[in-house]
Length: 141
Image 1 (cartoon, rainbow, N blue to C red):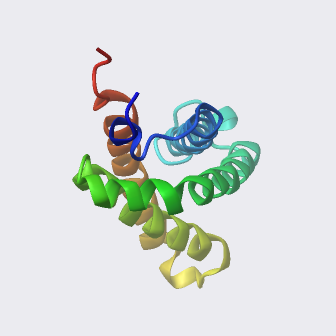
Image 2 (cartoon, rainbow, N blue to C red; image 1 turned 30 degrees about the vertical axis):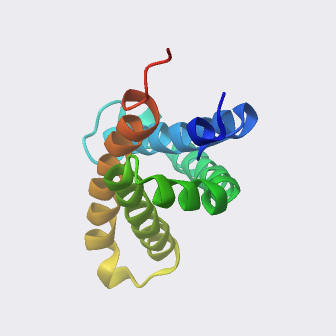
């Protein structure tokens, strides 16, 4: 395999770590959204334990992002492959980290608007993450 075709490709352990971190964060967030906002299985999905798991998963996702960001971002910018989806994810993740911190530490006056922003951006991120990391993969020859 040539060096050019490996540009930006993560080692297997790192790819699995990123996938696990991002998917667990996204899925626990969607579960909480369904329970808390849409009252689907509210007692199960909208409870504090799901929110706590979402927080733990967000910490894991942030660590996974930190492990991949320096090399993967540099390689992606250089190759210009999947640039739109990669940079969109980065912007969405920054917004999610800030809005998540504001939900926990921010003033009550902005809680409702911040919560809506967080879940809309979170759903957008999840869709772009799946496109970028799963569905836009180059077919193996």
